[in-house]
Picture 1 (tube, helix red, strand yellow):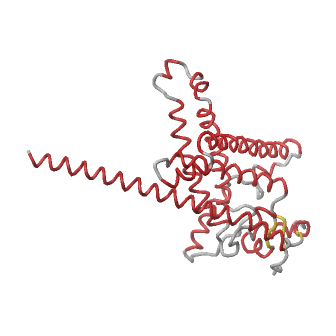
Picture 2: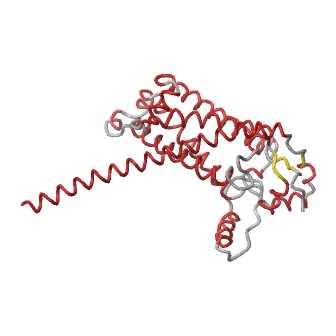
Length: 302
């Protein structure tokens, strides 16, 4: 068994840079956008003021949106370079691909059986099925937020793209606002709960997964969590080229110094959001109950 102190390089500098841009833009968008969604709550009003209020928070939101577009551009430029220049077809199909494949369906079923102790756990490849779902959701979410965000940023120009006869019945900016808001809620809720849970809050990763900053991961962890990938690298003779010196104590400290506050802010935000949604549903239920009681009382009164 590999020594737990031996580390492998999982993410190169380019991917870590892209992930850093995504972190900065995502947190900036959430911290300036969510206060508008929950504007009636004290925490949202406080946070909006903390982010500079109007118009500063809006300007920060737009700058973070541009950073998101830049990160997306870099990613698609990388995909184009790998496929068109380097002729790497494995980007879209194969063990190193982030796209869903038939084998992933078998892995999902196998994982369910393993959870109920009915079978052995599947041996995963370089990317596990839930990471692929996250990747595809990121791509879809970025597209939706880009289109709807553009419509909200330039409402007049967007409305002019629709014929006047249709614009009378279809309010594009309003539709964009609804889609933008609920996609934002879905993205923030998922990232700050599910993604954090199975990435940073696993027992072996607490308090944070340092691979997002250092790019390195314990070899023993790879062998246990991504057995098929580990065995493939070993058979192809590529394992030795992936081995790198372990991160220094300073690098680990800096990674936690950056990661732990982000984790805390994310968990705090999802707590605020969830409590606000519950309060809104409770208020709606009370109001509906009052109306229902009034209707029933009126019926019996007559």
